[in-house]
Image (tube, rainbow, N blue to C red; front, top):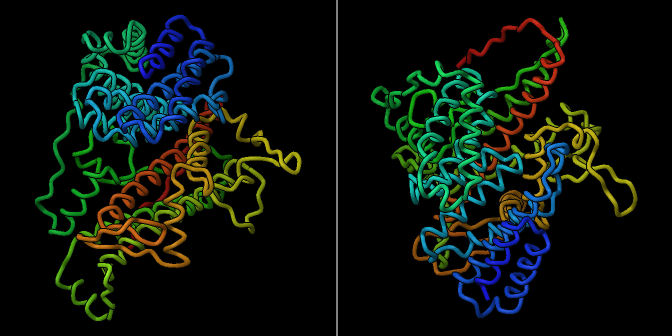
Length: 486
């Protein structure tokens, strides 16, 4: 029965028949509903993967160039594909490697389609950890990298160059056509020609190789800090083509505005918010790193505070406090991003009101007691990075979102308690209890989510400002001071 579901969805795609695909999806859902308790994780993984593919196929068949980016907003096929790929990943512990690679690749493709290119790059990395030569992941990652090339400023040619080399490396590989079919080969060929026309063959012949960052002059904590943040991809930059060089260890991303003469005030007002967002991110990241770097000095400081050891192996000390503070600080950034969106895109919410990234009022207008519609300012922006932030807000929804547990953890930390348990703890995690290892992983995960949100925010502004350039508005740049008075 499982194979029937996959066969229906594949044959529906081959024959361009939405009805056959829908039939396969319906059968798959029925099998899960009837047999969820008896099916193995492997079977549930396969079915979820098949259904996710089905929804992606339905989206592809309904895609219209005329509708542009607007068709990704609240698109039921993309939302269902995203959810079912996540289900497949949830059940993927003991599945064959080849299947796991395809699940992660197609999930990344879905995120990229939703405008969430940075999230997609993280997902492609999960595939390449399994198989660094997997053609489908390499090719699609290269295409996703292109999204950020123009926004990256001085890294533009280097990113295009790296993407070009990645595409060239898979162009004639057998597994590309074997898995992706003729369309995959056609798309790779098309993307190669596109890059050639964008930056020219001379730029593609340049050597953009980097030396690894030099840690020899840093003290022990600085070395640990740089390596921890680099290994977990926590630096805020668009140096996405290389993450072990000096440039990849800084946080240079910032907004750029095209403003009338003598209107520096607008820039500086928005810059203050971006400064606060980046400052909060830097502090959250630092708190996490500091929690992992034990020193005699911090040990002594911790010992000045009395904590009670409870029988359930809970941990309370300065290091667990640092982890908790990192988590809270990181989550709170999301609401500052919401305020920036409201101000920059003129979404009409009074600055005196509380605004959250998940606030329905931020993204929608109320048209009746129970009915809401997307704000025209959002819908008609045709801004994929703004759409990415909207999609992220759906994932963060406190009732229905994929990241609901992160919101619950933040609320427990702020308003109640969240207990971290050490090794040997045999309890089950709930709203108030979590293992030390899981707390670290979730804090890193949250920081990556926030990093993506900041990148989308910066890129959404740059997209809007580029529209002004296309309208022929040419203004002199202003020089700003970036020295730190330490």
